[in-house]
Amino acid sequence: MILFFFLLFGISVETHAFNFSTNSTKFDTNKVDKKGNIGQTYALKQLQEDIDAILSAPELSNASVGVCVIHPESGETFYKNHANTSLIPASTMKMFTTAAALELLGPDFKYTTRIYIDGEILTSGELKGDIIIRASGDPTMSLYFMKDPLIILDNIALKLDSLGITSIKGNIILDHSYFDDEIFGPGWAIDDIPYPYSAPISSIALHDNKVEMQFRPGLKSGDYSRMTMIPDNSYLRIVNNVMTVPTGSPTLIDSDTDPRSGVIDMQGSIAMIDPGMKTNTEETMSSIGLTIDDPVQFFLHVFKQRLEKMGIRIRGSLLTNEMLNEPIDYVGLKQIHAITSPPMSSIITIINTVSHNLAAEMVFKTMAKEQFGEGSFPRGAEIMRKFITKIGIIPEQCSIVDGSGLSRLNLLSAYQQTLLLSAMYRSPNKEHFLASLARPGQTGTLKNRMLKSLAQQQVIAKTGSMNNVSCLSGYATTRDGEQLAFSMMMNGFTVPDGIIRNLQDMICMRLASFSRK
Image (tube, rainbow, N blue to C red):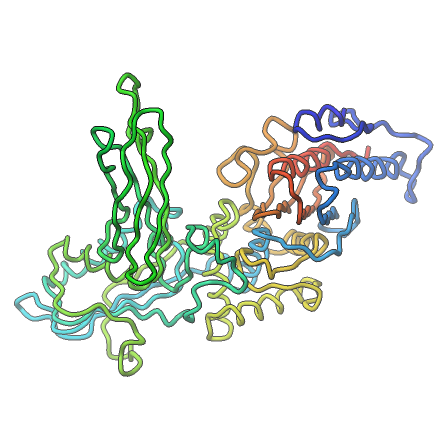
């Protein structure tokens, strides 16, 4: 049977005795464990041999592999293979960040971004003073939490309008001191920086600190494409050099930023649509995401535009807290509005389900700020060392430098990952943590995995992927209804990622089909 699965997934391996069916494991009734339970020792041995067979695939022959399967309550070991080897966890690092957030901040923790005015509102409708936004590290001004994050800014404008403010003589000031100024994590690859999954970290993050550039073909070949920027803003300077090409030609769009001027040159081509084809708007559009180099200035510019769109005139400048001569004293200011986030339990669900890097880093720095008064990567790492010590992991035997797993300086073992999973399974926050993990066939990073298999309904997990790294850690429910905590970490392979994911899925299927009986 195992040969069938390897052929199905395009993996070459010699034949092994293996079966995923509900009556796959044949027990030797002469095999008795220490408690006198017939077949249990044999069943575990067969499970281990089957996983060994999967990991014997030649596609893993040059890779570093760590696999661990344990019972999350008793600690019983079901399988270990280089389980103590330190490997790059990629996005499975987010399990540690979100677990720590539940334990340290609590599932009901909410961010509050406060809006103040400093000055008098004249009868003419002019605010003779400033508007001050005090950022709180909130990661939920995001497309993953709301359909249009700009509604947040419109609500501030509506509040100003309700106060009779039609113009602001002073400045718009953004206090982003909740986090430090390091916008990228230690050890992040320079090649990743332009991409939205590496969006810069800031204590105010509008629209996931990125814009979406949408392109549609012109009326005829040779025309410039029709370009739309979402959200529209005056901060980014974009030049559209994406040209319309004949039907059937490749659509290729890229960007190039001039380091001196900051102008972003959109380059490439977009093919015309065959007039005889019935298409909708989405089918005629191509898009590319761009990260924002300065999220603070981006927020200020978009905010100013939204105020002006609502008829509120800005006479002053766009400033940040470090541009001021002295720290802002909030005691004498009037708070006029507050933006409250969803609870942490909802935030970690987005982080783990879709693997949201920016949100993970913002939570990482939030824990540091709340615990130490300094929202920085070093303090975040210190928080994590304290947390993992409490769950039985020796800090000196691992490396944690960021919250998302984008850094290749992070090092964990498969056994350490199962220790975390076990600790959270016994935690009062168990249900929140388990609910945050991705499920096969549903929205998230497991949407297209383990489909139409027993594992589809019996596995919840967190994926971790980067170049030459693929990890999967989570929980599997066996045929007996028993819960298992597992971690699979594959580093350094040179075959397509899909082959490695298929091997991981096969192990999940085997765990789901396991029975002691």
